Length: 480
Image (tube, rainbow, N blue to C red; front, side):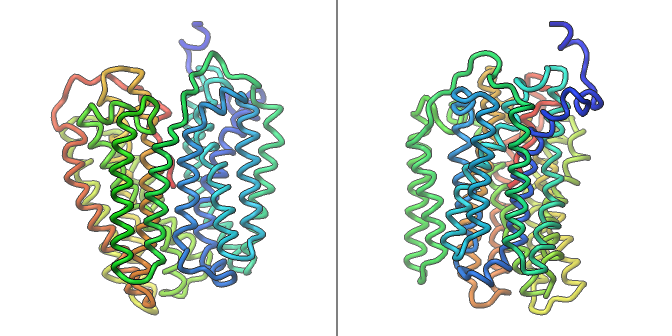
């Protein structure tokens, strides 16, 4: 036992001959997911020009995220049934199949079907990246492995817009999805030689919360439908139905012994506020979905430049996390978390105020500044919200569930945010300027309202909190 717990592994060991293949598969799965997020965002404006379906633009994100939420709840069950090797092959195979459908899609309807299948595989890949660490690597390398997996989101932030933008530039967006299929198959080919067939120890797979999932899916899809109907009355009615479905989800999940959210969500007041703050920030982040489209239509940017414009928020997120993570004084952390929604709102409002037709370099520079500020607002709060979730409950086992649910809450919020974005953008049509302002000012208002939750999420004074390992793998979220 002392061999694995008393000494920390090194990067040279993780990336050495013995574990390089394993590390590549674990990191590669998350890199595929992350790259796909930004690649698709970069390609969509060009794809819509060819196959149509502009009204369903936001649905490409919504169906992907809903499918990811559904499959993420099945990670433990899939691991118990198939082991790490089999689980990864199922996830990669599903992701490749969905990506191939996207590459061949003759219409937006087919593209949406492919995105749904992609989401099923992607949700599994994102969850397996962390879940398989303890079976595929020795304990001394867990923290290094988790850091490597988390770093793949940074890779996706730059690789996605670069690859997608280049292919879109030459009107070859289908080949970008084709290249992603090839990369997925390459990772799958390495799985049998790098991952164990069975997981260590026994796993409690639990039950898939079908009732909760059905209500969440119905709510998100109802908001998506509201984005394509005509007339304010039907839109308001559909949003009211979606709100009722969310209330029903909370009631059902609260009573379920195997809910989507941990039981402590409904018994610990502070955990609820942590999750609500995360949800507000995650909803605001989905504004980036439409940024490449506005970049091309309002500023005349080439697809490559518009793709990187869309990644500006993610860059700000990363830049905000780095200095903020070292803060530890309770009052300082409280101020950081409370200021985060304000920064997000200010950043989005800045971009909204300078949105105009035929925007020049100065306006685009202001857009980038606003998006980076908004991303930094999310980044400075996120590590402290993750620790806040873990410290909000006393039971160590429930603490693990509380931290693991951060990604689930984010996925759910991203799905609703993407659907709401579609409602606001389509409400502004046929004017792209009006659509952009409705989206950005609307999400800025949502972000600022998050201050009410942020004030209660992290205490300003020290409480009797359990210490949380700084290298906890659960502290790094998925960036969707």
